Image 1 (tube, rainbow, N blue to C red):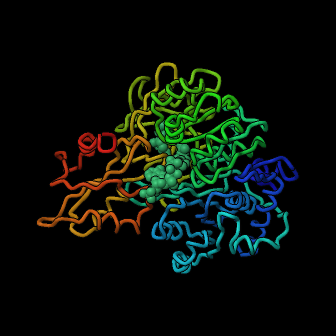
Image 2 (tube, helix red, strand yellow):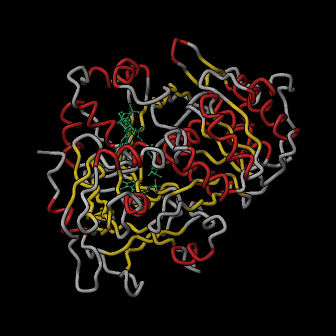
Length: 504
Ligand code: MCA
Ligand code: AMP
């Protein structure tokens, strides 16, 4: 049965004994062995009553088995919904409710915390651990290592990826088979990936970067991945000589540069370093070239759009820019007030259109209409300018967003939690420069009259509702928040006032 995403990424490798994943401890997994696991998982989920279009929420450690759940979902026509492993049960509850997930997969250690939640929303709950054990794996073990692929078309949903929102509520970006496939095909070609490539993979697989950009390209070309459970500097230093490519967020590159063991010798076998998800400082780009002779290729993307632009593989990779629109992607810089296109050199909002652009936010037609125009252009919320050579530079954001170590954090979500704390009148959350994470979270609190909020108690209290990486690294108290004449909090003034909080 036709299923474009499965057939093209996975099915073509059905009987291949080529290595797909290199794992810690010298182990490896062939394409065939990987697809066998996927087929067993698909068989189990079908028998559990899941049918095409059902959502499967997955909050499990990075492992070949978690990746096989992705393969299984595509094969069975299910919608893969990966979740950051750092999310608290409170946060996961929202995703389960909002998506109407039929099945939730978690590690054993989280089972009890989620049992009541999945029961409340009528979802099945199974476990899958980092070592591949768990009730889901046990139940799948008797299944055949082949599964009749469920028929799908390019316009059917393949994944639902949640991105936080400026109102504090996360929105599920609906990505079709064609969205994912078209982007993987373009990137494979542009970045010249072949079956000879070995990609050093240290990114999480619950976001576009590690899941779709890195993994889909590798699957498409039949390459290999050195599949590390997470970023680990020692492991990267050890494994770099075995790889031909690496993809990372800027923190990967600044951490490598901060280590004296990271020398040119380690990188002679590498043909391509890619950076994205957050701004790569021109300074990092230059230092990296000085140390290794490699010019990092920076590209720009979003959960809603996959990748939009890229510096060229063969031409000049210009530091501080994110390159040109990818083939098939229309990109324009517009006036945020009128929506009209601006000439080259002017700063405006970045809008994109193309086969990569998502279908809208899950069950949020109003939010979708705000950001996705009727003519197909998506308003990214990023501000940029195009130079006369066609290179795009991102100069800022028109949305209140912090990017810390490549993770997006929406201040509103944290402010809503801070505002509920004892003795807090109001709060403002801002991103300030951080030497390791690029930006980090600072929480500014205004106390209720005659009250002295206990910052330590607040920090402890918010731990139960917000993932660790979203929690302010520091909380400070101000007598009042600066406001403009319209009464709007002036975050720019706060960012300037606290700019050197983590760098001095
Ligand atoms: C971990 N911690 C963080 C972050 N990561 N805090 C702030 N920001 C972060 N990004 C905290 C933990 O909660 C913990 O806190 C402490 O740091 C150490 O945790 P650990 O897991 O050891 O951290 P790490 O391994 O050093 O992680 C840093 C990292 C990681 C390697 C930069 O965050 C990472 O892999 N980031 C990549 C994210 C990514 O893939 N982004 C792509 C999404 P404590 O010690 O206090 O408990 S964007 C995307 O997909 C778009 C489409 C695109 O364009 O690519
Ligand atoms: P996400 O919502 O996780 O998909 O993150 C998308 C956002 O990350 C974009 O809207 C940009 O603000 C940011 N981003 C991604 N790549 C880059 C880059 N190369 N330079 C600057 N910002 C980037």
